[in-house]
Amino acid sequence: MKKREALSILLLLAPLSLFIGCGYKPSTYYTKPLLGDKISTNVTIDIKNPTDSVFLKDALNEAVLGVFNAKVDLKSDTKILLKVNKAEIITLDYDENGYPILYRAKTSITAYITDKNNNFNNYSAIGYYDFSLQKNSVLSDDLKHNAIKEAFSQALQKIEFKLAERGINDH
Image 1 (cartoon, rainbow, N blue to C red):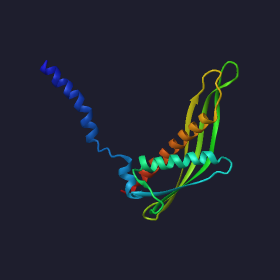
Image 2: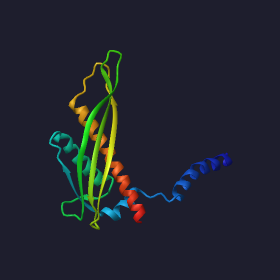
Image 3: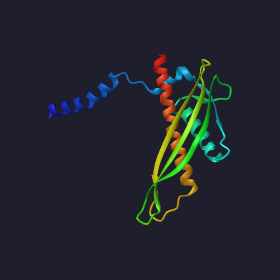
Image 4: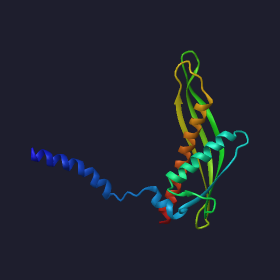
């Protein structure tokens, strides 16, 4: 039994030691020097679709708090302005009676960022979110808005990855 226990412990510790040894650092390790601890956020309101712009503002503030690990503060050196280029729901598939059952929310955003060192950059990203409906269901406004918000979140993650890449290159 002792050999078996030792082997079990070794099999558990081997992947952990590889993960620790690889030098993994979270993306905030690289974005924090660029963005700092306080970020001012703003979203350009799309007159054709103001509701989605509000969802993008919420998603951006959540990303600042959660992803960038910073505080939203109007009096900050880092400023992020987001613009909605496009937000749409596309039908991907139909059932045997011709009713839509599979949809994709597709969003396109541009982030204009002035970092704490007063460097200006812009980043564009596209986010997708696929979802389906049960047979004989209706695509409600709540489902549409939730899908758009999820697609915005994905696009924001892509921008965060681009910022982390810039942080790695500057590091």
